[in-house]
Image (cartoon, rainbow, N blue to C red; front, side):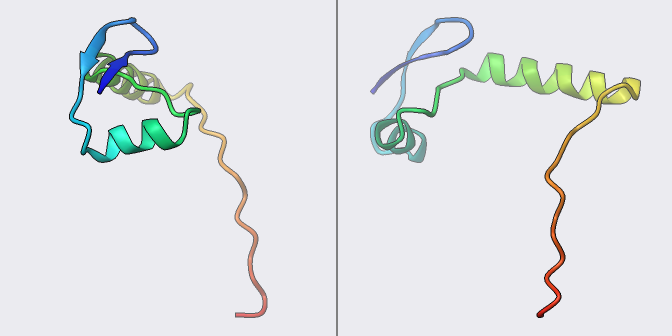
Length: 67
């Protein structure tokens, strides 16, 4: 399966039998990101977290009073 990175527009080939290929086929909203871009984003995010100015907004978990 041929895929195109959504950030750098590099075209790569991945195996049709992988879980990633299945996700991309069945859910068109999912986008492919090459390994270089994925590592770059992870590294930059860790750098921003280390500065202390990075806030991660997560959903508040509701407590279940019945359990």
